Length: 209
Image (cartoon, rainbow, N blue to C red):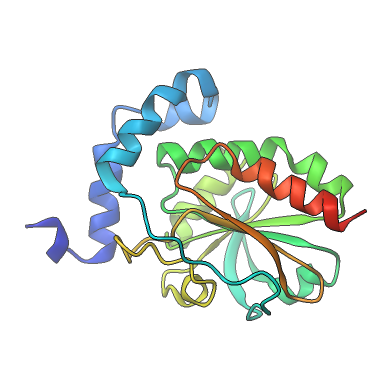
C-alpha cells in the first residue's frame, strides 16, 4: 500500500520501522549525542522535508487547552491554564516519539529541567502520538523529568500553528515560550533538534529578569 494512502497511525508505525537500525535500548540507555549526531541527516532525509515557516505571532494570546499526558509513564490530564498560573511554560511540539531527532531533543530538555525550574518555568512536549507510545517515551527518553501530551486529533497542534505542512499527520518541531498571561513570548522552529532548549532558556531568562 502506498504510504500516502495509509491511515495516519499506520504511517507513523511504518516510519518508525524505517528507523529500526537505532534500537530503543541504545536510545534509552546511552542517548549520547556523539553517537546520534550521524543519524540526524538521515532522519531529516527519510521523513521530513524542510517546512515553510508557520507559527503564532509574538504577543498573540494562545488558546488554553487540556490534554491527556504522561509523566514518568503515569497518565494524567494536563492543563495549560493551571501550568501558567505557576509561571512561564515552554510548549514544544515534536513529530514522533522515539525518532532520533525527537529523542535527542527530549533528552536535552530533560537535562535542562533544573535550569528551567530555577527560572520557575515548566515544560510540556506535545506530539500526535497515541498515549501508549507517549507513556513509554515519558519514562524511557524524557526520564520522568517533564510531561508529554497526546494530540491525536491535532486540535492543539493546529491551534498553535504547529502542523507540519508537508506531513500534516505530524506536528512540526517548534517550541514556544508562553508568558503567565497566556501570550507568546517567542518561538523557535527548526527540524534540527539541537538548538531548541538553548533558545527557550535564553528567552525565559530575559522575561524573568
